[in-house]
Length: 208
Image (cartoon, rainbow, N blue to C red; front, side, top):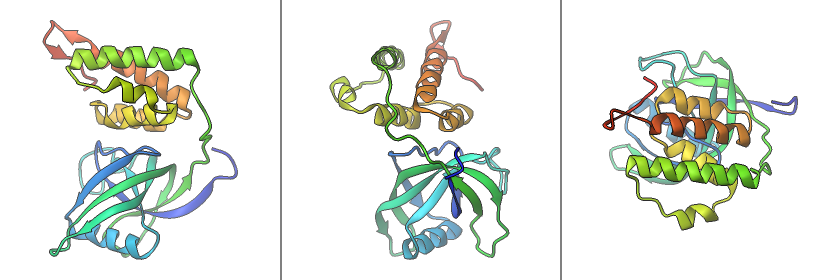
């Protein structure tokens, strides 16, 4: 991160394995009163909330150090106060400190990443990734529209696969924390190779 990174206050939604990446969308169903209040406040203010994983699945658990800011796009407010919404990833952030707040939802001070949005993969990197992705999809029995995949730009491809891939929370976090698109691509290839291996032709190997 450079000295030009902006520090700001963020309302957070800590949720295990719900990892948002810049440029991607995450559908959410908001039903807990504290998070309904958070969404309501965000809609009045700037439509921004931040996704970050807790390090453990317990109330008040410490947070990982990197998350992603999301802008509320489509939103459906229900009569009972719940929301269905689409969160659109805008930028990663690094946690500076958690704030002492009066709201029921948690808030943090964070530095917003100033990332190189023009970074691309080399032809060799892109080709190698697509070959590995095809092998992984075949091993998992996934049906993929490869013509559509080939039309995606590098950032949409790598961030999109990072978000939807069926990896464990720690692996998803490692992908989010990768500093560059190239590093994220290389880690994705390693994870697909690891998770794509089978034990005795039956069970998929996991990192758990």
